[in-house]
Image (cartoon, rainbow, N blue to C red; front, side):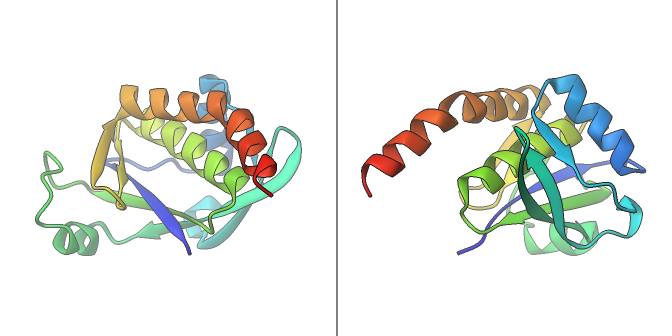
Amino acid sequence: MAMEIFVLSDRQLGSIAEWQAAIDAEGFAVKLDDTDFRWHSGFLPARLNGKLTGFECYHDSADEFMRENSDIDFGHEWKFVLGFRWRGDFHEFEAAWTAAAAYASATNGVVFDGEDGSIFPVAEARQAARKLVRDMPRLLRELQSRR
């Protein structure tokens, strides 16, 4: 089952290098594969703590997204939507969330979790991503102990 979050913003980053600088500024351990971000659509390879992972990343239509979610108060009509999708893998989950939090921070956007309808302003998205990074080793140990 695929999971997804979205960054809603009024500006876009122009390159992977710009996005990577935002990730590095936040202190997250994700290193994105260098690709032409303006046209990217699909799986975006990345490294998390040196290990290969990644997530799907799409420039979604903001108009369509806002129309499909018209029952949610996003504060205003956002101009851009960057969709993040992954298949339930914990490393992809961490990579996607930290990359999304950094993207939201760099664009002064918000992270929207479509699963539960939560909207995370930058400070809350950053906090959620840091909590995920902090808790991931424990979650992975618990998962392995159940096998």
